[in-house]
Image 1 (cartoon, protein in one colour):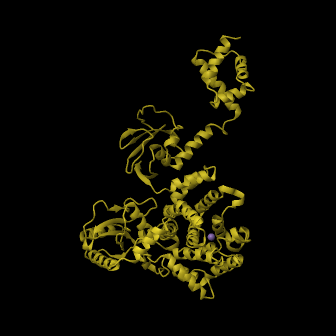
Image 2 (tube, helix red, strand yellow):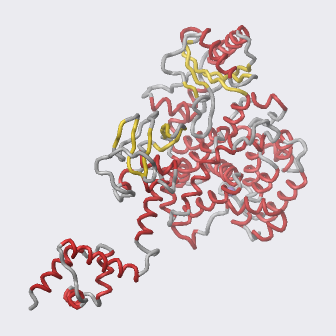
Length: 590
Ligand code: MN
């Protein structure tokens, strides 16, 4: 995200270290001395996209400035400073001109007299889709559901164009930065909401460059004391830079000896990451190991050569090596992680990755916009598989709160990887074979009969663990092992143990279809009559006429026979009970 990081091959290695906050501040003060506020934005944008059209940026800024004129932020700044800052964040991410135009205009439709139709006419369908995607639903009209419906609308819009989410994240980042002017209660509320949905969304989209800044600003508002403590720690580390310079130099030598071409740079942790490790490890003082990044020039295999060189130089710490190249994280993050005993016996963390892995790790879905001529097939597209899955189930969520709850569950960080049908499948932790079945085949999960985990037959409610090898057996599928008590699914009890949104939605849909509205009253009457007929047969009885049935319906207080039969179908009336009374009525008429 460095402003000057826009020059060819050097890009991949421009490890962003400067906090965006500082750059944003210098940008805002710089703006004061300049007659044209769009200059800095254009410069940042052109550094990444040299041939970009600056005229359209000026034009959209002029419209936004004109529409927001007379409006002010809570801080007292003119409102236009906000969309301009949001566009600047998008520019630093390397987004394209269309994104910047939409970012400049993102609040016009919501907060000014500028309509979506005018916007569409002035700037075209892409910009108007992006702006519409981040425009909130009216609270006065939607009431409590407004927040959930707004997030749903944004997700649906992002399904068509993921730039909607990039603008939303940049918008939230700037709003969080300028929360200082709000009351402590509203700061905490906004920070919590950000942590709840937007930070995990950012993580799923793989935009680490943005997530680091969001993480830190959330920490600043929610844990001001911890933030201050870590700030103090980071600013007062005697010998820290000298030590890192020494490690970096020695690592370079080791790599050169092994003939691995690579850039080695210190890779400081962001505040939130230090805080998380400190809390997780129960440390009294901020826990922060020195860290370096090795970005190799060559192919993937060079990462392992580099790992060999590093481990040859310094002894690795057992249990700290992770291969996210062979097994990428669920946001497709790829890297080797190791911890070694470095100079002076101090522990040092090392990240090893290729140039393209590094680009993806930093920019995620934004990679394709930042590096349009990159040789990666369609970088960032794979990250959208997750988004497509959310789009699949969102239609099933009838109300906004249900949608939000499911989204949160889907976004939860804890995931396990299991192996099924020769592939790896990501599931929420605590998932069962039923979750897996619906994940593999949403339309065939209903037919699940049995499952084996690591070769042994296991109850469908078994909690799967990371690395399990699972086989699902369903109807119409060859050899089914005789599972005790196996019956045709789905069963209502499944709802008590399934974890994934996909499984919950499909099972609920199955049961709601079984009742209304697919089945008519006429069908229910017929079904009720058939049920009673079957139950009578169990008692070796039958009915010659409907007269006893009609009398019973009357006795039980139903307005007519049909209503009683519907009650039987809907199980409001037990067929056995009806039949008992019916037999009594026929056998012992008063
Ligand atoms: Mn905004």
